[in-house]
Image (cartoon, rainbow, N blue to C red; front, side):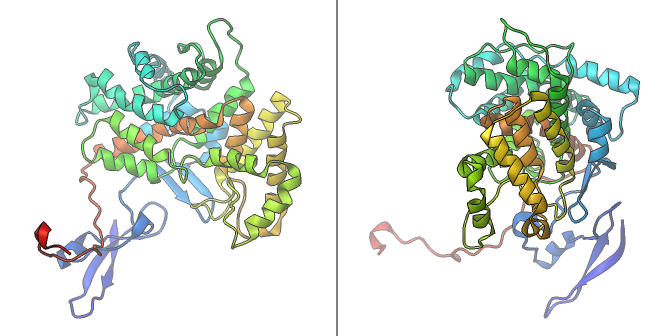
Length: 429
C-alpha cells in the first residue's frame, strides 16, 4: 500500500511525486513507474536496488539472517516438515492438513515416471557431457511429451504442470547420472519417500537393490528443503522473465536451469570441492588462508559468506547439524578432503578475520561435503540444486500468472555511437 510519497527534484523541471509502497515486512519501496512520463528512467545494473515484482512466497532479511517461506522460518520447516510439505506450502500458500498432504503426496507419486520415449532422448548426448547440459535439454523437451497441459491461462493446466515438474525432476536427475555412468536407468518406486526414491534411482541397479539409509534420506530431504526457494535470485528472475513472454512452464524451468548452471549462482557447492582439491592437504591450509586474507591475491575461499546474508546463513546452521549426522552415519575416516573441510570450518568459526567479516560457512559449504560423503559426484551437485529449486521456480511462475503482469522489458543507458549515415564500401577508409 502507498501511504507516503517521495519527491524527485530534477534541475530545470517540475518535481515528480513517487508513491512509497510498504510491504508486510522489509524496507519501503519507491514506485518509479511514473518516471517514464518525464522521458527518464532509472539506472540500476544488476537490479540491486529494484523490486521487479510483488511476491508473497519468500522473504529474506540478509542483515538479520532470516529466511521465511510463506512466513515460516526455514529452520522450523527443515526441522518439523519434509520436502513435499514445503512444496505444498510454496505452491499453495499454507501448510497442508494431514488429508491435504496425503492427497498431494499421492498425486506427486502418480507422476514420477516419465514418458518411455524420453529415454531415447539421452542417446543424442555424449556420455561425458556435463549433467547440467543434459538437464537443460531433457527438461525443455518435456513440453514435447506433455503438451496436454500447456495452456498457461488455464489454472488447472498450471497445477498439472507444477506437479509434473516436482514429481519428475528426481527421475530425470537420476537418469542423467545413470546415463553418464553407463548403468541401466532405474524406475521410480512409489512405496518410498521423495528423498528415498531419489537415492534409490541414483544408487541401486536392477541386479542389486540396497536398503536406503534413513539418515541419508533425511539429509537429502533437508538439502531439498534448504534449496527450495530463495526469493528473486538470478534463476528465479530468469524463470519469471521467460514466463512473462507466455512461454510454456517446461521451457521456463529449462531457462532457470541454464541460469543456475552459472558458477556464480548454482555452482557454489561444486566450487567448494574444487577449492578443496586446489588446497590439497591440511598442511597447506595456512598458506591458503593467508592468500584469502591478502587483498592483492585473487584466491577466494569458496563456501564462506554470502552475497545476501551479512550475518550467518540460516540454512547453514541446519546443514551443519545434518553434515555431522551424515559423517557419523557413514563412519568416514581418513578422507583427506573431508578432513580438510572440517579444518577450514574450525578456522572460519574461530578466526577473528572471518568472524569480523561474517565469513561463516554457508549452505553450499556443508551441502557439498554431504553430497560428496553420500557418493554423489561433483558434476551432479548443481543438478540436485535444480531438482530442489524447481518448486520455487514453478511457484513464482504460477504466482506471476495468477495476477496481472507485463512482459519483462528492462531499459538501458545507451553509450554507443549516435545516429550516422552508411558510407558506400568503396568510400570507406
